[in-house]
Length: 482
Ligand SMILES: [Ca+2]
Image 1 (cartoon, helix red, strand yellow):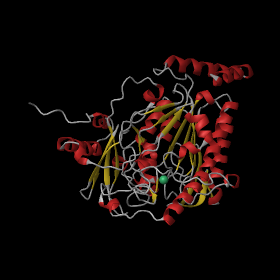
Image 2 (spheres, helix red, strand yellow; image 1 turned 120 degrees about the horizontal axis):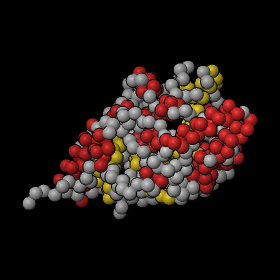
Image 3 (spheres, protein in one colour; image 1 turned 30 degrees about the horizontal axis):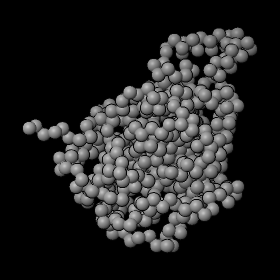
């Protein structure tokens, strides 16, 4: 307990302050902690990237060395709505998108204006942690279309990009709006977040830093020192890349031509640029880890690493984008490291981005409100869970101004059932077909398909605690009576 050692030093310097701290530590210890984790509230550093394709996390050495090898990587993490603003609303509130009602990046589907209009900003993971005594700070991308002098409740330190949609032109630095050089935006995010950690770590209160990078979203700004990295590297040529046969898929894919040589060359070039842009995020993770170690706080700090949504680069004949029901867009791995969390473990238990806020609340020993749909994944991360009863998580794309298809995915442990609004259905056995190249809804019975259709509707209608029952329902329908 390094912070406890510091408390003892404070005691020597100031008898009164020392007595108060000793009392606080005694009271904290007296409350006990059922998970057996740190008695002093841990720091939490949450790094969120933008549009990151699954697998690219393996090209981030500091992330690998500090977080993945020292923590748990969840290989089945469902993004409940693979688009920026809906994802960020889910992440801050711990709710499914059908409960945040944020379905797009701007009005009337979503955006900061709608998030604020629905007063969702008033009750988030920031207010929960602020209420639990944390020093909170947000850095970088907040919500699409945020261009306001208002600092949302719960944030003590505020450094958030302003602009229309993705066009960040300025930054709100603690209420002062300044011009922003977009090329340098991620460097500044890292600098401001690093300064926050350095200045606040010696305080008595624990720190919650929510650090939001623009990488690896287009247009992939990167630093000169990374210019020579990833030369000759291409998008992984999995069976999904420029898929040979798409006759098994819904019409929006079935009617696509194979990618041209020029399109593939562009995708490979974008992929290399995006990996270079991620190195700024990676350096932040390395620097933050070093600072925490120097302050003796690394073992008292949780790291959370995730993206607002995944992205595809040429899979299933799609060029570059998101908002598709396939694994590239909806299964970026959540990575956790910190007190009590297992080391160097890939955990296959089914989790979702609606679990992140309640998980952070659990780490902070803060109370998550009853509206939260997700659940803490700490029992899985620590290994305390003897069972994980969840059998499915729902991912959706709701009607919006973008072209169809709209869809709902029932993402099960090893299976995936996709219902398209246009009537098409896809089914993948992920155990034998992890790249989703052979959809075969006929491989399961009509009763099973009906059961999965009902489950999509049930999860799509759930709220709060009842979402757990909807997600825990049996994967297969009960056998018919003889
Ligand atoms: Ca995004």
